Amino acid sequence: MEDFRDRARAAMVAMRQVFPATPLMRNDHLSDKFDADIWLKREDLTPVRSYKLRGAFNAMRRAEGAGLFVCASAGNHAQGMAYMCRHFSVRGVIFMPVTTPQQKIEKTKIFGGEQVEIRLVGDYFDDTLAEAQEFCRAQGGHFLAPFDDEDVILGQASIAAEIEADMPGGADLIVLPVGGGGLSAGIRSYFGPEQRLKFVEPTGGMSLAAAVDAGEPVTLNKVDSFVDGAAVARIGAKPFARLKGIAAEDVLSAPEDRICTTMLEMLNIEGIVLEPAGALAIDALSSIRDDIRGKRVICITSGGNFDFERLPEVKERAQRYSGVKKYLILRLPQRPGALKDFLNLLGPNDDITRFEYLKKSARNFGSILLGIEVREAADFEGLFARLQDSGFAYRDITQDTILAEFLI
Image (cartoon, rainbow, N blue to C red; front, side, top):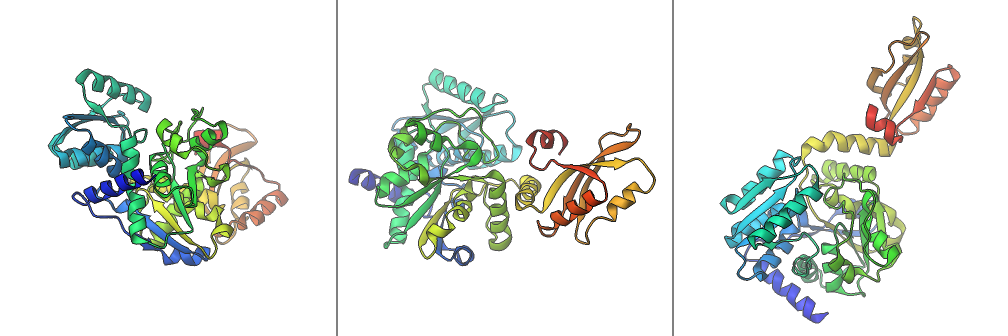
């Protein structure tokens, strides 16, 4: 334990040559909301807006003699490695899926400069990864894994060393996001079992929970990719070896739509831009509200690389989770005045955001896709009652994932 802690502290000290420690900041809004003492470890404020450059720095400085580094990533890991390739003046080749947004490609180029080459390969990440690994073997390079690497885990543990330095009295609880497990393994290994931890995964990618249940890493059959920084189908073998033995009740699930409400809350109230994975720890506070009351809690905000082109989707999902927006299929009689009759049933604060005929050739009835926003979720109860009393048939498809995918 002490050897790991010493090495993590040494890594932290070495990092100061490259970037300053990220701030540990008390958040008054969250503290008031949860009646607790809430602090944020702002990893979204590193030079690449995520903690990933820590692991990249430590792994690359320990890979003595390596002149070529290779990775496969479409996100924060790529940017962290690119930044460190420029710092160490070594060559890096980064493989990204062809579908990677141009914004992420350009940011990686900026961080890496002339030291980094980006290759777009494959429509899916598995294809990209296979190509990167084959290239690395052929060229004799050093493959930089995003989390399944002891040096990467040690680099992420520097976060714990900074927390210890900034808060000598410690915290009652640390809440941290989990993807491949490098961050959580580093923090747990540094603090040991005496520090209470809660591990948060997106509901659509709970690979740690599955591994805890099985006693070993398992591959999920399906993963929701919305929380792209933490949507991992299989926890890393090396991280899980360090996480093995944690209690199942300490692994929390964060629904993707609820994460969207947290992202908007932090943006609108605090002016803090978080990516979905970066909001995981804060979002989980609502699941442990009673447990944290009156306690000091640290949440690790792991990243802020949010593409604002995704903001409409985030707002949409947040509204649906909050119950203030629904999608209906309305069966409308094909007679004069039917549409007016329906519109007269709307409340003063009800807003139609989508109106689309789905079946224009119907003789007696037409099917209409409706998107409706209300001020309060309870307003839908009155609207639905008025629709039924007036004889309008409708179907709520808000939570019907198959219909929503095709129609919305």
